[in-house]
Length: 96
Figure 1 (cartoon, rainbow, N blue to C red):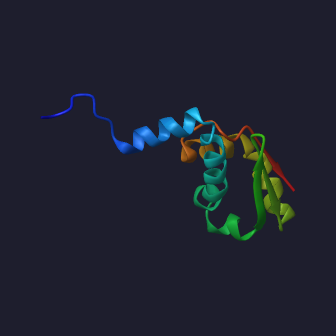
Figure 2: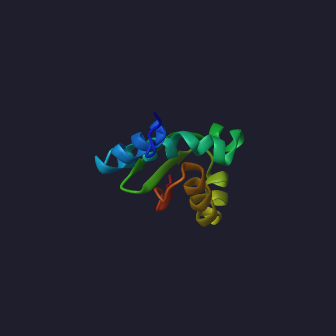
Figure 3: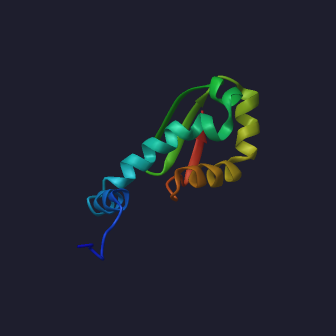
């Protein structure tokens, strides 16, 4: 006998995480890990501390020239980060 209202286990897990408000922390962690993937290895080498707090992604840079370049592209970086994560988790980026 086949059940008609079956769901994929991944959908069930996503639903439970969202209901328990655990989804936000997982997405924030994903955003930090996707930094190098979204911006590439050259930018990843110039960053040494990345963390997110209250929707703001803080990135500490070793190169002031690269920091100024990334500040000009901040809006595009936010869009690309949110697309990579799959949710609107990054609201702003602070380069230090």
